[in-house]
Length: 398
Image (tube, rainbow, N blue to C red):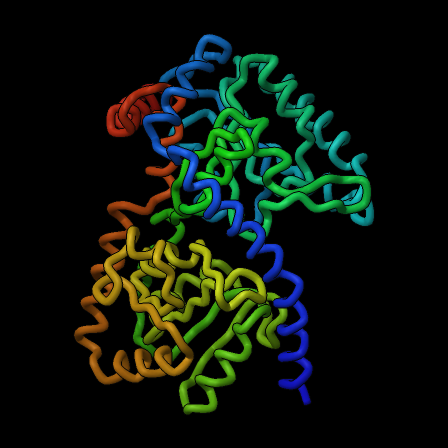
């Protein structure tokens, strides 16, 4: 009965989400015919046009961040802080106090007022050059962004899971969706590769880059491989179906996260499990849509912990890892089981994949590298030069 109810819920949610995504995809496909599309060269040109109206970035820029301290406290903000003088306004504290008013525009007004007060406090010491946002559109007032740009402050917004957060939706008296706020920012960072053209279409200034991880917080931990298979993440979509299937075949799968009986575990325990398990499962579905995939944070965190990562195939991953040599991917539950069986029988080859994935993550997929690139774009200089200058300046600053 439990499986029947779960499948009915999945089917219902899929019927809700799929028409919206198909309409969104139709807009992308039709626009690609008539638009030159996204390029970093065009992005640099747009940024140069804004330079005379924005504050110049010093070697160690003063950045005020509008974000939260949930998963972000495990290397995300710290990485940005290594390249800047960073002060973070945790909007989730005020949002929690306003629980029940999430559908009211009052929450945006209060958060906007608080953040502008926060900026004013920071500027008593030195001028803020960049306001960096990582938050849902529900909490960002376009008027707040306009007030910041009027001060000459660069504005940057990072978007995640844009495939199901792009479209405008009415929630109470709020118009939400990334399309409602992205055009107001100087730079919109999206992890949706194909979506950059769609953001261009609505007048935003997008930059494509995937998520990442930080080797200070995600790193290998020594220990015997006492765990067969592990999955860490929320309980939704097809995740429970996959885990039940694998368990039915005899695999020992440990599962942790919100909604599971085992519950949420500490960051330290998560890193330990990623490092010492035979394999770590990933599932890149968007919500209830098995047909649609999105790059996830786990795609970088697991390899950076030296874990053997097995996730659903997503064409975007082929730009980021060498499939089969750095991570493993499956197209069906049956193929996932085959891969787990292969890993169990070929421990040396599995170790080679772990080491290759770790090396690739450290080389190409750190948060620090992503943030250094953003700062280089705002400066109009190559990322390598920007990174060296930041490191040298921070040593002096320290």
